[in-house]
Image (cartoon, rainbow, N blue to C red; front, side, top):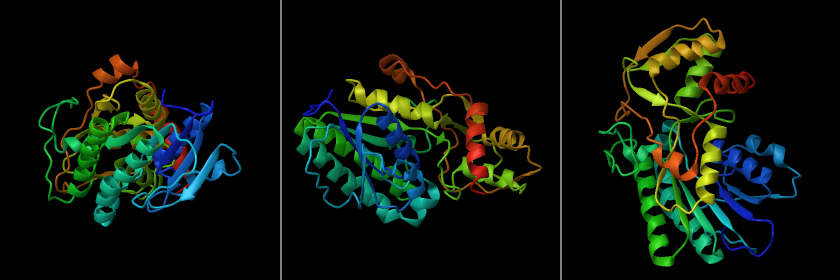
Length: 317
């Protein structure tokens, strides 16, 4: 447990109005934390935290985390989730993406150091790039194109991990690193360019479902509640090296498109388009560490998770 001056722990969540940050905030509040959420709404949405209005254990600050974070109260945990996280976002916002991963991580770590708080960085499977080993283990150093269109996101996260370990080694900050694999669920943005919202929105409208390449590239999809539980367990653990959190059940994009059409009862047909540059051919986590250290593995089956996700998107389309 991080140092505490009051019986109720206080957590700071950067990116609290985002898809993952808002679900994390909900979990922390349900487990008795007081939460201070920080977001500048570049990719986050007020809708994701609107239900927390009036909750006395939730305080919100609209701020860019690349600027100095001043909080005049004790803090036990800092969860750094602020970052554009989909290809559309980081292709449109490459400099903001690099800044939030570098300057934003520096400011969030500075807050943790100042408060004697434990720090967790939301890193990503993207640090493995287009991986040459499969499935990906935490010891794999990755295959990343630093100057490609995805480089701004990949390198920001790789830098963030390096900065986190530097604070751990030099300043003795208690740090945790989670590498997040493909996640889906309610509160994803409809037009964020990721495969789940893209396929689901196309299928709901009975429009052609767009598969890139020949659809043989693979992904594995973890439902958001499973992911957030794994991340919570990592923060509360004593393990300070990176841990993959994701669902190792792998499927091709073609299989996934067919599953979405089936789950939505859509009349959509599948169409094929050229593969984007540096699009990873395979992505699947090895979760041996999460299983052994955190006693965690995903529990929500794809069909069950898609039901709630599709229901959410039906209210947005």
